[in-house]
Amino acid sequence: MIDLYFWTTDNCYKARMMLEELGLPYALKLVNLGNKEQFSPDFLKISPGHKLPAIVDPDGPGGAAVSICESGAILKYLAEKADNALYPAAPMARIVTDQWFFYGTSTFTPLAQQRGTFYARFPEDVPAAKKWYGDTLMDLYDVLNKRLAEAEYLAGGEYTIADISVYPDVQMHDYLGVDLEPYPHLSRWNDAIAARPATQRAWAPID
Image 1 (cartoon, rainbow, N blue to C red):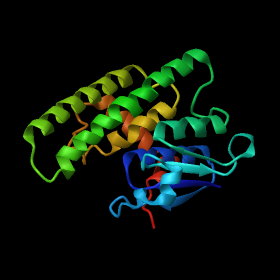
Image 2: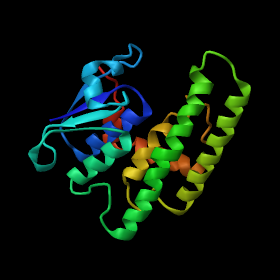
Image 3: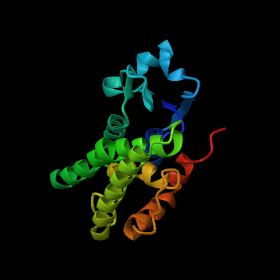
Image 4: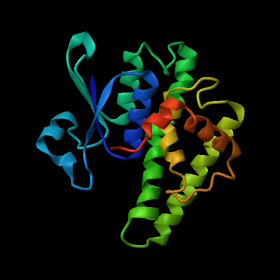
């Protein structure tokens, strides 16, 4: 049983979506960011940078227990644990998948998070920052929309970890102050992923 250290953030939902898609048994271990539980000594042993999500797999490589932080590393580890499910092994397909996977984890999500900071959470109104991150996010949405005009999913015809790395920050578009109407291909993709049973289980309310 994999332990998933979780709170209701975009990156945490990526890990939960992946576990649900793969059908791997897991237990949610809630880490309340509002209470700063991510700084507890026990959690820092699992995630030295006090970041969520994190996982502990008692059946890691060679049967040894392993702890992993960073959402991208978690998605890749889980895909490989499940025989590259959602992460194609064919070299050309892997290259395309990696391109959009890293776009999601390294470009799209960090900038979407900054948009959320200044649009929804920052205690002061900072119009210049709101405009800059808003314009930047619109550009990123446009990039995704153009890609999805030519492919069903980001890596091509199959659903992969690249899609999971991007979906939460598209799904949260209302929170980010983004209207999907100008992005019909991205909207189609968003609705298709939202309809997946694993996605619905991953985003189910937490008891």
